[in-house]
Structures are given as structure tokens and as C-alpha cells.
Length: 192
Image (cartoon, rainbow, N blue to C red; front, side, top):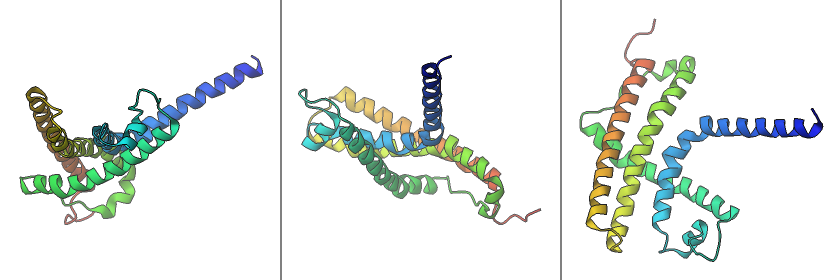
């Protein structure tokens, strides 16, 4: 095996490692913030020359690294704002309609950090995706209606999507609350 073959093998291993690191370490951020944030940004295509440039909406230009970077950063920022709106509105709605947050004893978290992180990645991130996507849909919809970009079948489809996102958010949050209460017990329960 020559030096070039070793280099290729090393490059392939590095690519596999970085893809698995991306999948395991950043998947939650992608679904919770970047996807909903990108959807909102994308809805501004045609209304903002800057957003058009970022998405290369002009047939004369092609996508650029700078455009990708700006879209990524802007999507995270928009996703964080959507998440704040979700916390303010949707979390409150769920809490007032029969799904209060459980009493958890975070004093025992130090011994269960890995399990809690797994729970967050496997339950709470999906709740964030469903909830943030629902908020994104509610942000996008008025502008699309105002600009007459949607027909009745599209509006009906988006209403169904909104219902699915709402039910998905409720189910994911209920699962997260139940499992986090099991993992962290109750703050009022005595410790062994």
C-alpha cells in the first residue's frame, strides 16, 4: 500500500467521522432551529433581494459559500426567535390544557447527565422541531396569503400540516415530560 493509498484511506475515514459527528452532535440543532428558520427565510424569496442572493434565486447567479454561510447563520437566528415564540405561546398553551411540566429533581442530574442528554435528543428536540415548525408556518402563512401566492387546496394542505405539527408537538412534549419525570424523579420525593 503506497502513501497515496494511505492518504485516501485517511481522508475517507475523516469524512466518515465528520459525517457521524455531524449526525450525532448537530442533528438536534438542525431539526430544532435550522429547518424552521430556513423555511421562514425561504418564504421571503422574491420579496428581498438579499435573501434572493443568499438562496441564489436569480438565474444568472449560482449559490456561493458566502450565501450558504449567511443562510445558515440567519436560519439559526430566525430559528432561535421562533423557539422563543414557541416557548411563549405553545408551551403556555400546552401547560394550560392539561400538560403541566413535571416536578423534577435536578439535584440528581449530575449522576444521570448522559441519560438526560439522550432524552433531550430523542424527545425534546423533536418537540422543538414540531413546535418551531408550527410557529414558522404561522409566521409564513399571512405573508403568503397577503401576496395571493396560495390557492385553496394549498391553504387546506397547510392547515392539515399545522394540525399535524400541533399534535406532534403535544405528543413529543408529553413523552419528554413523562420520561424526564421518571429519570429525575420528583423534587419532593425523598432520596435513598
